[in-house]
Image (cartoon, rainbow, N blue to C red):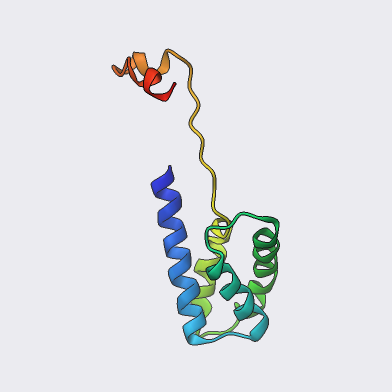
Length: 107
């Protein structure tokens, strides 16, 4: 799960950098730069910036030079904020698949 999230975030980051390199209007560029500078943040400011980006992206979708990049960013927009992944299991789940000591390691 973590590898999938990291892969999606890396693709998102590459597309953001590509869009900034090609150029976009100022408000979106500033918000995207802020997102890159605070890439691992999950604080309220980063979340507000993510919401701002999501509202600005459809406005640049019509530009044929960057349309493909913007579509990919829109597809991956839920990955602007770092996700927390938790794995929770009971005391018998690891034993059933042959890893009887795994629950003791976690404890």
